[in-house]
Each structure stands twice: as C-alpha cells, then as structure tokens.
Image (cartoon, rainbow, N blue to C red; front, side, top):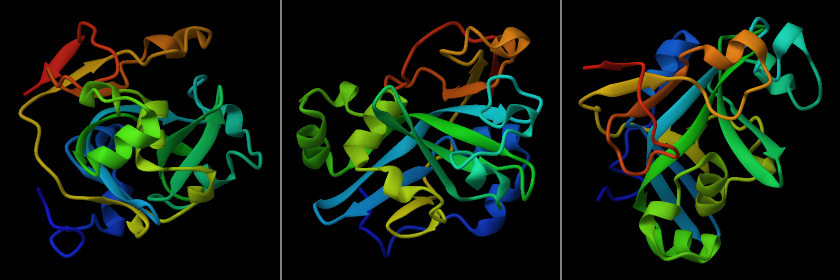
Length: 208
C-alpha cells in the first residue's frame, strides 16, 4: 500500500492531452484519490468509457451542446466533470482540449486505500460492491458536485500513477441504448478479468 501523499507520482498536465480513446485506455490502472475532512480514499481505475462530442450522440456535448453542465467539457483537458444522474454523482475526466468537448467516464475502481471509510459511506461490507459502478465509486470516495472543474493534478481530487494492466478488454458502452449508432461504438475499456468491473460482458476484442 502506498503512503499518501509523498510516495504518489501525480499524473502531469500533458498526460491528459492524449486523444480521448487513448486516454480512456491510459487511465486504466491509474490511482484515483480524494482527500476529505473524513479521511482519504483511493482506488485503481479498472473501467472507463470515452465520450467524443460533438459527433457522439451519447455525449452530453453532442452537436456542441453548451450548457452550465457541459461548460467544463469545452475547457482544457485534465479537469473534473461531475454531474448528477438518477441522484448519483458521476465523475469524468475532461479530454479533447479547449473547445473540443470530450470526456472519459470513470466506471469502476479497485479499492486501494480508505476501505473502512468507503464501507461507512456506502453502507456495505463487501469490497466488491464499494466501487463497482460510476455512482458507487463517487460515493465511496466522497466525490461530489463541489469537485466540478477541479484540476486533477492537484489535491483534494487527483490521479496518480498506479499499475500497468496486463491486458485491456474493449466493448460497447453501457446504458446508452437510445443513442442510435453511438450505442454500438466500442468505446468502453476495462482491465481484463478484474472483479471490480461494473458489468462483465464479452469483449469485442482484447488489447494485450
């Protein structure tokens, strides 16, 4: 277990300048950390989804839709994009660069630190249920709408180097059935066979 924070190597700003599909894969294995007055919690990113507006019908920024909610997507890469979905706060990494509204949704984590705090926040004891979904992981880590537009290179919410996955599985995104052809884009990525992935399904292909 790493010793926070001095032993962590935070990802630099230019890490987030990668094309969105590449960033969605590069984030796998990285450590997502949130510091709060209650303590610190962290987990390794094991599942992501890429959203590439304005041509992606599943993206909030489809057709360059610019609202108070999506404004941060038009800013520079490496910021936190948080929003509420069905009472859950979801967390995304802004990508694509200025005026190119794209993002990577973090769908699942492998719990790494602050496990007891996570259990209290989620009200469950099983590790497998703490962070196996985009709403579960934000509740476990204490990520809220107050983190909207926060730069991910600085505390209290940041991403650091973690491990390098042995293989990455690729498949369709989840929960976007009403988005036409976008529902079939293979823009979901996960650490192959990791038990903390939110939903296990057959991969379209695997990157070794």
